[in-house]
Length: 85
Image (cartoon, rainbow, N blue to C red; front, side):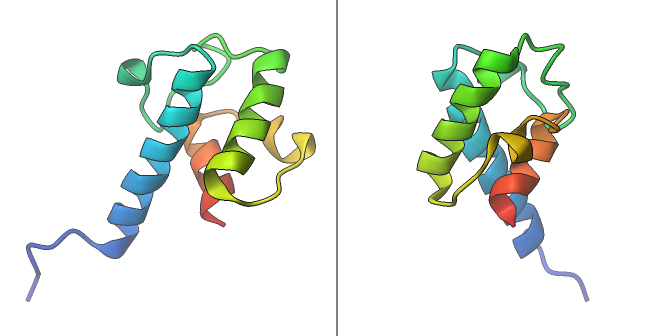
């Protein structure tokens, strides 16, 4: 029997997506144009943006990240996984 309630995994993903979009908005990107599959480079994220994203993700999530964690991230989903670990 299936429940009408969303799975906790999908709720966690939605929360992570919202948090990443809030960070991306603070670096000047339009969160309305973002999906988990959005390629960061295609959205205009450059190396300086990645540094700012690292700092803001740390503030948003309360976890310590390093540039080496964020720089390989290719998509919004990759960033979501970083803060969901």
